[in-house]
Length: 517
Image (cartoon, rainbow, N blue to C red; front, side, top):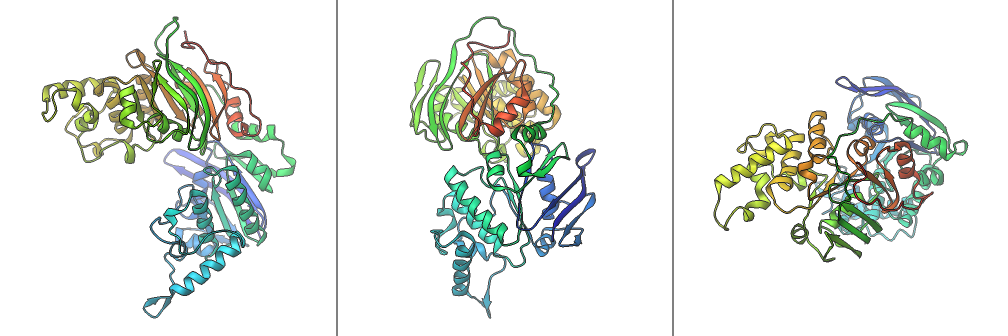
């Protein structure tokens, strides 16, 4: 029997995300679900898992219609979802994770020996006899690829599994690890389970999947057997014909600028042999999808991760490879991380303390607070980023997401003196339209770009088109192309980001100076 999604619609306020999505998954097949960011994939998964209720449409499984799904009812229906961010408890063993929430008991006591026996059986049954995992191993001690396999074993060991949904399962894996995972997925599908495989890696689609459905702007843009789809047809279905957004104007300059950030042969966790140069006054976008290594690259430039090879120079001076965030700051490199809630904002501190945290040592002698200087520095930063409200005493948690991001920007653009290279990871993720426009205007302003360069990563093609002078396309940790921003061929950029690992192109020669007059 089939797993059928028929006419599913979902809106959030006035924003209609799913506009009547229909698809049919057959048992024993691996069904690929593709689409660019914002296409509706995540919303559809949430509707299938019971996290969100669709506004209309039906979900049928083996002829039975399921409505009003909650996470518990979805589990009862036999639907399991494995997300990019795994649900495992790192401090527990594989066995304890597999049986979490459904522990076996003999009277008041846990039947630990029986749980371990069943876990051994499940590991071998799902992963094969040579899986190399021990049921008593603490999950936090395992590499991410093995944790992914444990998550699959956990899902498949629950009774009545009929649909397994995998959200970007190979994004964080090496080719060898991804190959092992695909063998496991094939084995699960062969057992009669419906497998829905969400990915942006086209190599996985052609290597593993039997059928493809592509979502674009909340509707099905393509639904065909894999064997009947050409690569060009697939990428066209994903990208569509994208209208060009209006660019954010930057400072006018016709002169050549000196190199500011020079990266040569840099290798590290999930990226390899990255080489590029940025110049004073230039904004460079690094476009990469999930698993491209974009965050790891910025964190390595900032010294939060160790580089394995290569060099980084700021203004012609080499930054030590065994660097740290403190050393990076001394060299003039600052980072605005992608997860501001956990990595950047001190929610219990007030706005002034958030902005001024790294700058106290620059405002006067240690162990003394220089209130007048602090007020002036905060006010200048708040004005520069258009902070609202510009209240230094307001706790950071009281600000909107966009204004929290402005607090972090102000920290490096105004409060801390000496930043020459500003790195931003997904700078407007989860930010409203008004705050996004303010941030773009700030980053493109002459005040910010004088004496600085800005490098940002994003998976949003509009953000690249609006903000960057040029764009580097990063695929599986390698720069596969450099594209000019005026005019930016966004369809080609998206095509390369999906196919670059299969069809690499030489990196264009480095642009000298600022590419915009």
